[in-house]
Length: 117
Image 1 (cartoon, one colour):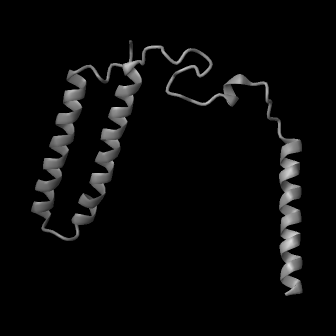
Image 2 (spheres, one colour):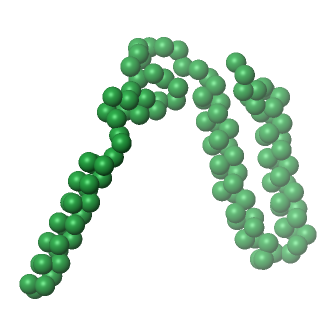
Image 3 (cartoon, helix red, strand yellow):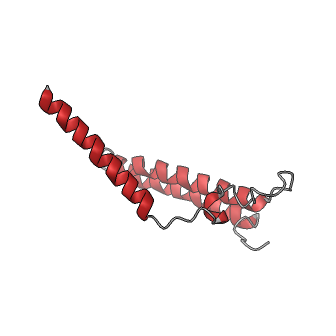
């Protein structure tokens, strides 16, 4: 019991010393406005909150979510390769790739991939 208490006290002392050293030795500047401000999708947090929202950030978010979900759906197709016939796997994969390409074509046709304003 005594040994466990001493080990716990030593761990607390060492961790506190390391935290204090990191605070003392860090080169963090509290006067730097950009590092202290939160990132809010292109908004300046120090200005008015009633400025119009750019749809550019919304489109980037939607495209990211679409492709993120697509990656999550590709993993089961890879696992399916060992469970079913090769030709069935090819049909499923081809159908899924066609759906992805149709979505990409729709985004391209709607000028969502045009990153200039």
